[in-house]
Length: 481
Image (cartoon, one colour):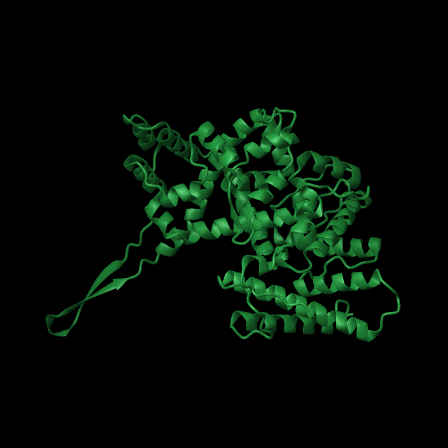
């Protein structure tokens, strides 16, 4: 089997890389007909994977406390939205203008022979670096907006029907991103709630269904429902879509001056106080200017929240690189990850005091679990024997040592390899093998060869769809043989 033999797996990966490069360069191994209508376009991921969000499937007792496959899939969707948001902020020239980030080219006059002079315009060497600073600036605003939302949300969630109440006050994407990162530091989240006297948030699970319904998984855009957007703007007097407001909305001149000072790091509390005393300032403009005062205060919690989001950036990038959400083996990948995560938790009880490190697929399920804090605490105590914190500040050396220990313990305890390849090809082949194992036991070598060919065809088609989607071209259509 290719997954068990290094040489065969290497050949599989080499072939896969060659086919992907061919697709990107317009030299596909196979040409597919183009979908002529929306109805003919392939739907990836399949809607059926999210069915349990509204119609929960019966699960075994062993997995009842763990995140569902649907929840993990929505989490992957959300991480893609975070990735898109960061990319949009960093590349936005409109946001450069709003924040007053402009290039300052150097004019150099060089004397030449016969008294003539030549003027040379030299690029600003600091411009690219200053453009990258938009993200920390945007993130500081998101942290303050999160704080504003959290206070009101905790009161609104006093309703016994917390899940229904949360749907109507679903936060914008920037705020959701901060909430997400806070929950991925469980111990800090608990202390944060105590210090802020938040009574209801520790009981609230991430609203997966509402998040899924808000996501356009074609372009990875997050569209806040009208009810939530209205509640946000009426309750906080702040724009619900902060990126759209910063890049497209015409602003009062005073507000624009504040934004320019903020972007160029010349904003002071004195400027803010002076601005707030200006006559004729609207309620919305006043509320918006006030959030800048909090960004300058450098509250310890604000600094920690911004740092938590930044630490998650590498995980978001890894999920974008794996792109399991577009994989033909998505359901199988998440089902196996869920099972491996359950075994991972049991190791904590079996080997107390040992630092265990998750693989990427296990980490995805672990993160998803932590986003439902009460369920996570109950499950970790029951399965792992204690409340497990999630420390995302550990260095590479510590993680590498812990990974080696985890691989050895996992192999000894369960008789299986812990660190496995989760690429589309290997996962799709595992799906095929599992399907065959569920059937008769008399498959021949030719049967497995045929299965491998079918897997290769399936993966190739899914890659062709994704390449076309990213290029903005019509999607290919798979024709049944």
